Length: 87
Image (cartoon, rainbow, N blue to C red; front, top):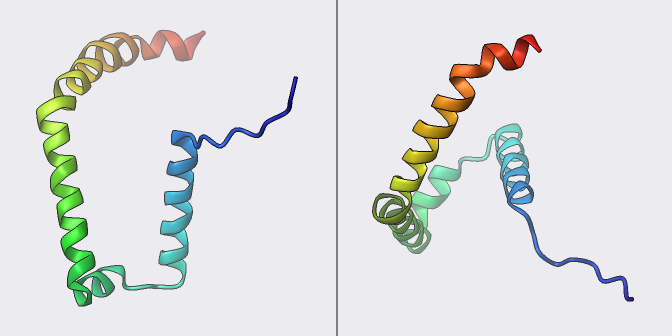
């Protein structure tokens, strides 16, 4: 049996890195929008990525996401939150 370090990053690691990045940008008052606006190639790439994510959500993920939100989050958790808290 060998000990191998997992090289797969998790979703929480990505979220944590994004939050740390946002805090650093906020702390040092870095003008990200100004930087992106001054570099048209970066702006075009980000615009394409945002458009892709919007299409991905609207074409494929919104149905499942809305089902989970309405039938699991709202119906199961939100309507029973008082029972969960009072236990």
